[in-house]
Image (cartoon, rainbow over all chains, first blue to last red):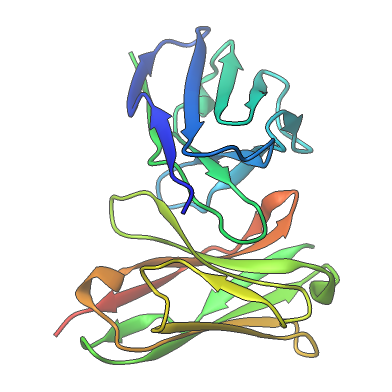
Length: 107
Length: 116
């Protein structure tokens, strides 16, 4: 099974900061990588699909990059609404493994 | 309005069974793969199962293989998860999700509590 490892587990930042979250796959997943944002008590929200494609309606301060086994999510110019938990996920039509999550906290 | 609505959660004893449903609306249900994902209290997201658009192909996470069964009724725009031999560790919010661009549409979730 493909394992997904995110880092860091927790990230403290301030409004206006630029932050990066990393996700590593245990084997190559090409670009079948998605990023989600989740707030307490709510369902996850898709931000990025196919590693770097921005989902409709998602602000352009969110960007994704990478391929193979190494991926990043970057948020440029943090806004108060961005403080949440972020998950990466590989999806390949056979399984949909998530990373363990990164909690983005206000510094 | 594109929407998924789960139902069927509740309190069940260890070893018991429960069937979750997910009602789809606002899109052509039969054109999409669908999945179930769960989240234990205070924990991360865990993918459980995929089913193809026709319902002919499905995959499961090892943690639920042999105990959970995914199915769908395209005529009723509905997705199901039959859960048998439930354990304490199955306690979680269960979400259904559509695979369009990745998992692009999610339901609001239904809570399953396994406890004696």
